[in-house]
Length: 264
Image (cartoon, rainbow, N blue to C red; front, side):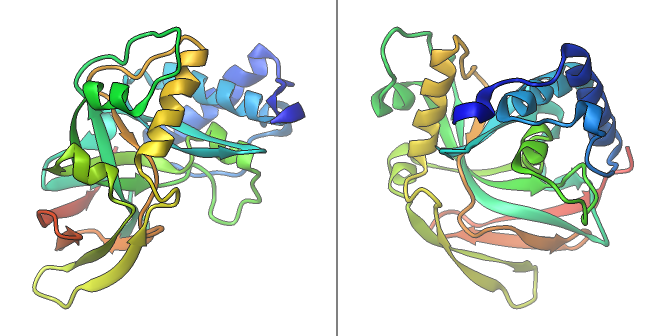
């Protein structure tokens, strides 16, 4: 990732940027790009701000979103424990009566992925993942809709994640082979929409393996109890807040839930 890896902001600037993004995240607010004095200029700046946001929020990291990196982008961001939900009544920051979601698979770890002096393989993941769940990533940005943003801006803010909803389980082997499936969803008792779904990497485990080895190289771990999502099967779409909604991913167990707007 070349020069974009080098940090250009001071520690004070990183803390100032993180404090503002944490404030917006905590209160459901949006605003312009960060002031120039604390705006990330590199991926390293962005990751430092992202990590500091976690400190200012005072919430545990309950999971991660990730994707395969490219030459100039690294796709990794925390999902906070208090924003991970399993109840059929799911709180969200809503806009104009709707929340944007992404259909995903979530890999839940039953134990810490151990520190290792060798690269992880898929078998190591299979031994550490306790269950795979059908999931919806809950989407929101801490920036104004019309703000002109760089990828580093978005990375610092956690890549538009506001939380995660976890649904029915599916077998590990079926999850590993889930390169594509149809996503059906709609308001209960109304016609459903069918979206053709395909994983952006064609393999939902490939980004998980990358994340495990990315963390390994810096002495970090995916921890027991954390959930990892690796990419949307059908982009991002808006769901209404209020009515009961039904979803079905491929042949797996359908599920229903209802979004309600957060007030704090």
